[in-house]
Length: 129
Image (cartoon, rainbow, N blue to C red; front, side, top):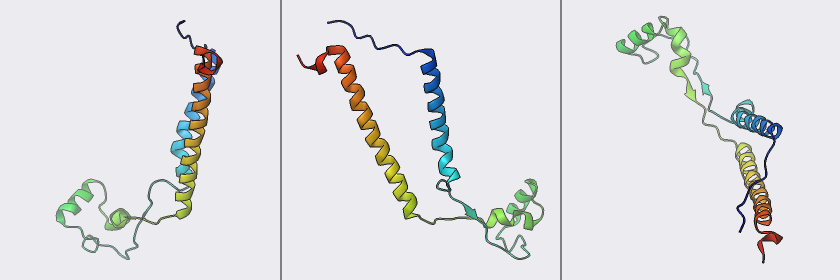
């Protein structure tokens, strides 16, 4: 039995593959951010005329805020009162399920096609003798 030698890919094809993979990797990270589907937003609670006491800060905390450059309680109020927004979107969940199932189906179809091509190259006639 002859040793299998995979087909060679040209340099242009390799460059195109790298560019496509970079675009897909960067896109998969940033598209959800652009669509507002990733991460959780922090929404600060408005406090009129905040003081360190009204923000629930003790003397040690106030000292640390001062070390960080927040001497005025109003400048740190948005950071201290910010809470995560835990809203849920059925549309976003459905869209993510469609994307994942579509990706899985595409990978199965392409993998089967490539597997059959490789078997045909190696054994000829679809692997049947």
